[in-house]
Length: 136
Image (cartoon, rainbow, N blue to C red):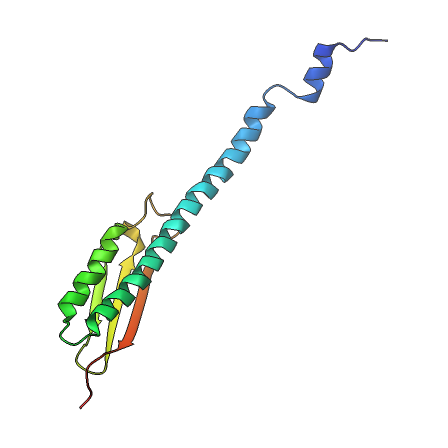
């Protein structure tokens, strides 16, 4: 009857090269998940900042004497904080009883890493507030 030695039993339980094969299978999935989480985190940050910038710009434009240019400058300064590029800011008003600020940010140029999942998306944020002007 053949004797089992420590060397024979170790090779039987963990074949040579199994770690490399396991890494080759798991690594692409792991790195895809890590890069996707970074990309979706950036999308969420841009989305939240666009919402907040639209609201703050509308708040700035709702007071008497404020202009659309000042509201645009306020939104632009907030978007620069997170490095948002190519944003289109539109301010409607403040000529009537409301002011509306709309911000569109394409995600193609706003990813930290080359965007894979969000490159065709555009973040859209709108805020409409009543002005503090007297209505005639």
